[in-house]
Length: 225
Ligand code: DC
Image (cartoon, rainbow, N blue to C red; front, side, top):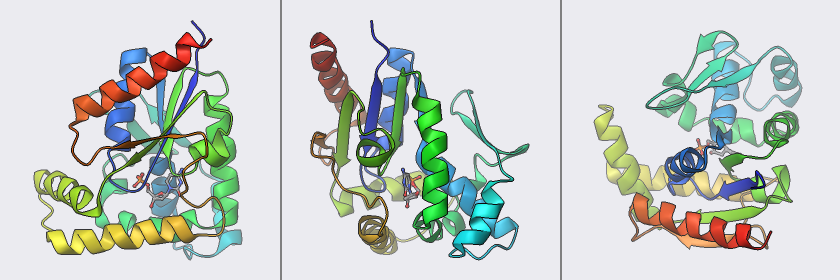
């Protein structure tokens, strides 16, 4: 069976990484979380006191950093050079600053190249905002996951509570709306649905149902080969 490329895009908290991980595991494919790469660069910039909108300084910083994914259970570990950043890149400080960093042209160009290299052999499930449009425009399967702002805020609220973070629901709704706006209105590679992507609305679906839907779409595609 051909090892295909699967692109999963969509706005923040639509459930991309949760389902992408499960789909990759079921297919014995590699999973690449491109949001984690943008988050890692944001962490590196804050740590090195690089201004988050200084494109040239970020370019110089990127030339010195390696971002590695190491398979592990229950989740893949993320490294910035030799420092593990798996948890720290999920903190509100990073979440609230990542949109500025991910709008910088040098950052997008650099990470896009790294992502294309990771996906080159196929057998990959990659999630993000611009995978179907820019990173892997010829991906065999393109999924665009959406869910209402309220539903996404409720999901983030529950996730946060498990981690002991108590941001109120209305604040989370506002943050999600702001991030949607920034991700969709930046000049380079804004969040948009690729013309050949299949939209899956996850608002009233549970994780298993979304995974099943995506596996069905993949199966239909594979039958065409
Ligand atoms: O999926 P996430 O929330 O971890 O992504 C973090 C941020 O990174 C998000 O606000 C937008 C940006 N991002 C991007 O611009 N392009 C991608 N392919 C993935 C993420």
